[in-house]
Structure formats: structure tokens, C-alpha cells
Length: 154
Image (cartoon, rainbow, N blue to C red; front, side, top):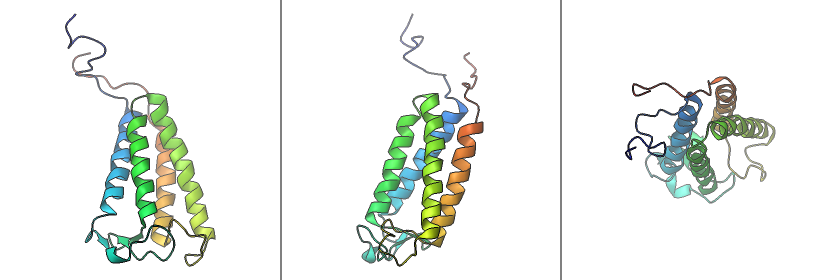
């Protein structure tokens, strides 16, 4: 058995659909976390604060961000990439990540944008994006097939 035929060397071996979906979310969260630190893509960059509703930085001029908010996106992305290694972990990442985003959506609706409790910070655009993320992540986590995709080599 050559190194290429070894089960440890997975050339031609596709990940399952749920792992690919988790990978996509992980990459997007990483990208968003990075973009939140780039002046120009993040408007009002000179008003970027570590945390709190007073941060005036806006990713794409729409989503209010802070250093903490960007770090959370980066961590979400890293966890997503790590979870793509196993089907169950990818599924749990999507479902539990969606549940966390549902909680953030509700939190954003309940807490005033000017409140000290709005420490992440969140604005209306963030709230509705969190709703969309909650719905899509939970549904994709539940309904994306767990079986590995067939490849030409199989």
C-alpha cells in the first residue's frame, strides 16, 4: 500500500455536505472578523473601541463592530474550521452556533442600542443578520445529509 492509498492520506476523498457547509460558515466568519479590522472596509475605523455601544466603527458601513465583536467572529471561524474534521462536530457547530445566534438576536431586540448592556455592540442590521444566521445554521445543521459525498476514485 503506497502513501497515496493509505487511509490517512485522503486524496480524492470528499468531505460530507454538512462538513462543507460548516467549512463555508467558518471561512465566512474568519473573513468577517478580519475585515472588521481593515480601515475602509470598516467605516469609522478611528472610532473602533474594544467593546461597548459607543464603538462607531461599521463593517461595510452597515454592521456596528468593536474589537470584541471582531474577535468573536474570528473565534467562531476558527471553531468552525476545527469542527469540519468530523461530521458530528460540524453538525453540532451549525446547530449550537445557530442557537447562540438566536439568543443574540433576541438579546439585540430586547437590549437598547444605547444601553451599557449592549457591550458587543449590536445594531438593527446585526440583529437581523443574527436572525438569518440562526435560521440558516440550525436548518442546515439539522437537514444537511451526513453521508460522505462520492468521488471519482470511490
